[in-house]
Amino acid sequence: QVQLVESGGASVQPGESLRLSCAASGNILSIYAMNWYRQAPGKQRELVAVITSDGSTNYANSVKGRFTLSRDNAANTGYLQMNSLKPDDTAVYYCNADIILGAGELREAWGQGTQVTVSS
Image 1 (cartoon, helix red, strand yellow):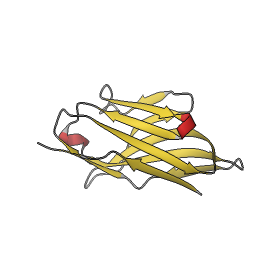
Image 2: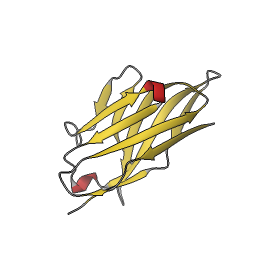
Image 3: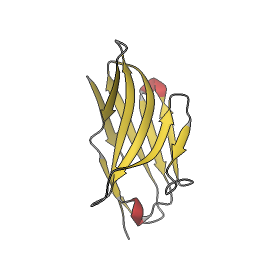
Image 4: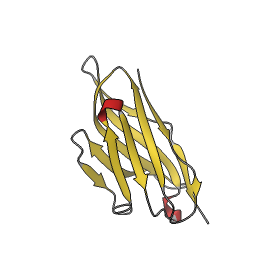
């Protein structure tokens, strides 16, 4: 069994920063990719950022230059640093990961989501 737990969501004003965390637990051998999605009210879920096991990152154009991914492989935890937040960043943010279990099985996991609200 694998579980992803996000934390760090909050209500902030435009221009402020937040750091989201995604902690994976369970019988984990390694995590290949850790991704962040978001879903705003009335909109489809969109991919925000991706970080692979070797630290390679990719960002949606809407967050490029403002959001930064990092990960602590030893702790099976990923982070999304969000700076210069805008009202358009308001959404539920979800962590998603491709996890290799101890038995060698590859499994995709999702977190429960954390709310980020940017409003003045």
